[in-house]
Length: 285
Length: 321
Image 1 (cartoon, each protein chain N blue to C red):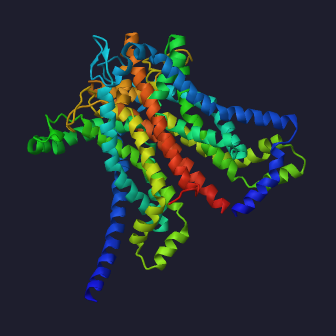
Image 2: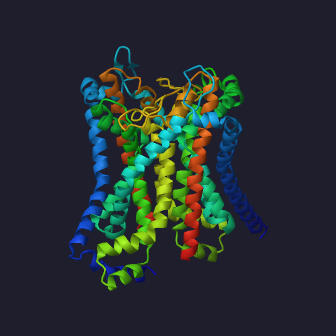
């Protein structure tokens, strides 16, 4: 009798202890987010000024200068990546949602997920071999293409989910008033899913914006202004990498500033995307 | 609900096969878009294979077992990088798995409802932080801290163990392992949480009905039911660890040694590519780096295929437990 009561106490204790440990795990896991953000703010905030945002890099060793070309370059190549990946990604997502129950649909879904797991550095070398070698030059085009390869599977999978979430009654209503299937998709289903697709696209943009590995040997980087597609282009992630590796104090300072700008863009995209999905799901309920 | 949806979709299904030319065009376009997935994978394989030919023909299978890495004399072997990748990714997994599982359980089973969304959100932010930012932080904050507060005491007291041999230099296998584990935690957590949430309610209710405590239910019912999917989540995280590049390159020290010491610099397959590709001047050097990329591609392909297979089995409800 007494032993069983002890056992009951042990079970209750083990229950509380284990559940507490899971809470501790969650706290430990969340801590790095705050630690890293605090360090970025502390080390970067003073260097994010007008000079940093508006001027070109100074020669190695000189103090001052900024990353205007890298900031513009990042937006430029991510924009190019979006231009290339959006139609393909949305098209593939629509296929998966509408025709995806077939054998080929499963294969495509599987390949999209596998593609999502391909290391970005591998995408970097592949695009280097595909574009940089034949063109005999690092280029903004190669950088944009590499980023688009990262975004395509992400956009495809979120589009699939969002198109699938559109109620079938909408399709039925459109078809019953005589619209063709293509017209139904174009004018009814896709507009209904647009908000969700935009959310997925924003998350893909956030990912692409922070990627350095696929740009290292495609866009390379550039210390000067360039807006041509066929020439090397500066961008924030590889610039952070170069500056962090350098021996110059002033470049370290600027690397922190660039990281702060980078994380600000990435966080805004993430927060806006997630807030808007939450609103949407609430509305659906 | 499911049945209703499938009946609805059956009602609209015939429209998809309609005979209007515009419908056929629409379908042709989306099929073409979908086919891009397979084409991209083939493209990567082809480009990497082509660019590695020179190295493959020069070194053959010995490339994978040779520990030489001498760009000056053009002798290349990938063993130090394979070793570094294995050591860093497996050790990172050992840190990340318990923490991720604990967090996933906390989010899915333990936390009060109002707390679940915010915690998930913060964990997802961990995945949103760019690799190069992790690297920057690791390089300037974590590495100096590790050297003074962890590595020096370890080297002094436990230097006789091979695991902690050598001087404390900061940039090291240990730094790479820690950064990697932080970076793969959000992936393992998110997928595990999904898998745990996919465990049917009836399983938990049956367990409570037998008088089990919450923890016993989680431990003996939920985790057991979800274990295949959790294994998938872990393998998925492993794939991330193997391919992670920038942050590792910035803290691992980049030295091609076969070291067993956590305090010593190392090198991984991804980081040697990132670090040396733009400096590689000779065709053979480039080709050798590309061949490492080819192996990395093959490994992550296998890992991801396996992980997806496992996760799908559970979340689609096809898992036999």
